[in-house]
Image 1 (tube, rainbow, N blue to C red):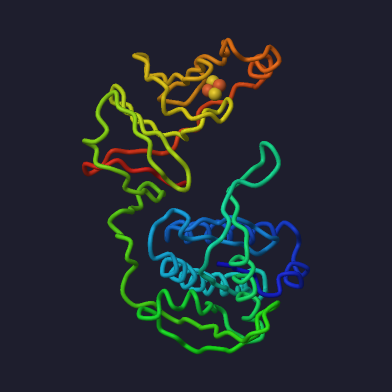
Image 2: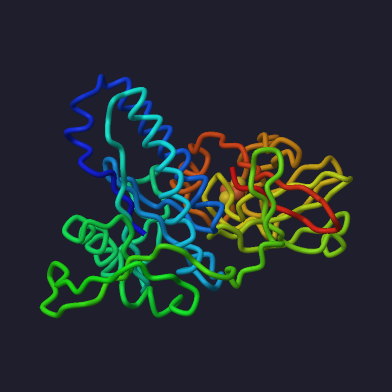
Length: 316
Ligand code: FES
């Protein structure tokens, strides 16, 4: 899903930079919450536009959840419109384009600055569908491939036949005004508690005292550990050299020991208790030095709770 602010450049020129930053941050914050609530992820910001992806969590019904998010975004923007007009005298609106297809998903960026990114033809098409709103004078259009996924649950306001950029064929884009029914992903698997969305992960009884379990959550492998009534969740990758932690040990002092170079982390806070003292004998001296040269990085603990006989992981 591509979401772009209508005529943002002239709009931003009307306002002091401080106000532009405030408006954008407030808008992006709320959009992020809506996308997350519907099981998506914002993968990229391009100036005032953003790209959100649904379905990389392997959950079904990604188009329905994405369209639901788009409709909630438009509703939220309608409220912002009035507020921004009154306070800043600007006409604020967005355009949304949705396409469904395969894409390349992976970590992109320079060292230390990588993030999960999504690229490929499907992404380009979603962007072109968003742009098609301009001519069609619509706010939300979805491609034929996306429409096929939800046609029995979508109310179509209108449709347009367009030649998308770089395509010789005309295709139909649908303007969706409403969704019927529910997403096929059970809503019971998600709750909103303490200002955060939580996802049901497993039965509490399946994570006994002293257990560690690897699960997939939010596109990464996460280790869940229960020890002495402390529940911890963290990425399966050791912050030292990104090697898998799953074979590591839980110590009686509530620490987690990396199986590779003996780094130890507090299970309560993630703090480093011991940092890389040894390297495997077979490693060349140069590599051993390099291993030692990496600075201390604590474990980044994820929000976790035990509630209603289930383990839940939170999304900030
Ligand atoms: S990979 Fe864990 S301490 Fe080096």
